[in-house]
Length: 316
Image 1: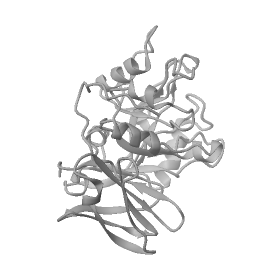
Image 2: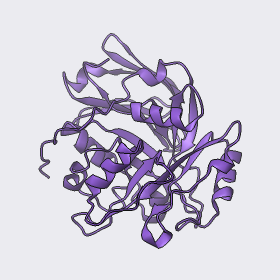
Image 3: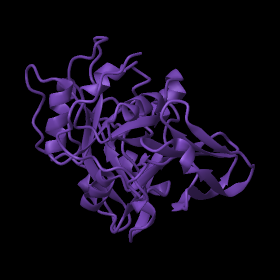
């Protein structure tokens, strides 16, 4: 498939570099994509928040479908915050239509409660831009699930991330990925990060399967959203990434016990460390070439993955 060159970006989208492991603060565990009875979920907002809080999460965003059928909800979850658990306001926003005639699916974490409904004739790109301008962290979500094309995705110039894992889509349709789309966008020059989420609706056992670990100074909505926008996080189904650092021309990854640690770049560029039980892997960054992106994937014995955000040669 021929990918068009990237349009100029209206803003600089930071990528992870190595700052997430160097900056002060701690990693907070959260889920950015989940639904409640405010749209098509099975459980009330209070119950969804309770389940995630009791499962050890530090934060959640109820991202109910921002559609006229549900009266365009930005679910108000402020009442469910505690001293150790917080909520980010947001929504999964939609507008017609992709090249396949599907509604756009865009995730906006950090919307104001009074975010205005979709406007007549508004495009996916315009809606994403309006969400970003309102302060949200914007993601292209479950692209494999609804066969979102690269050409469609290229029109969204306000996105911060692409969902590389959507737990519900993986369980219910076997289409839970997004890494291929992310890599094609990165190869074209776009600066985007990775994201793993649940997208839980609680119609099946679809919670606690994909989340983010966000490095922030405080577990507050503002601090978390700012860290997300800065790329100071990684995504995971279970494995932990303790550190990523550059030593000479090697990228060193410290992680929970892994089956494989992979450094991936443009096209077929890749470096593997496949030693069962390894907790440190040394990967040749030089084999990624002089320019372009590289990103780390850690896979454990159960086949669960953790994804770093992309890093760019020459910028760390």
